Image 1 (tube, rainbow, N blue to C red):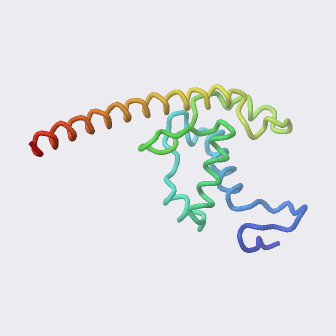
Image 2: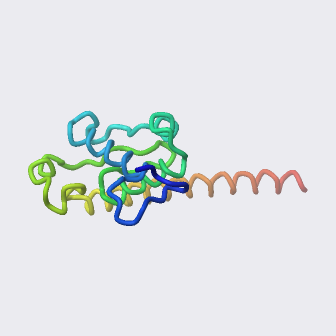
Image 3: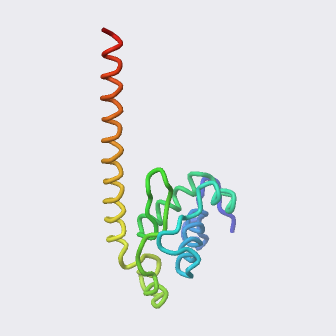
Length: 142
């Protein structure tokens, strides 16, 4: 069955949408060890080319992986495989946790803490730049 415009599919269809295919492909690469904790995930451009997908579709796939705890973002650096053990997932592929790691919440909290620390540092850097600019322009205006 063909997926229609805007990623719509017939109700009750078992056909996965492109973003679901991208997410599952990356999950499988993580489960198999092809991508290990801390490894960079493929860039948006690489995934767009590889799957013939739009940027929005790739963003939806990455958002899903982050929500499930498989990936974390590092502002300005990209997305990376989250740090936790996926071996338990391979043992019980029939359970509801088959697509999400058991420690997903911990990984998300750690990722948020890292992002917060980086944001705080960026804010401090920007404040310093603003103060330097203000003090420099104040002298010129005198």
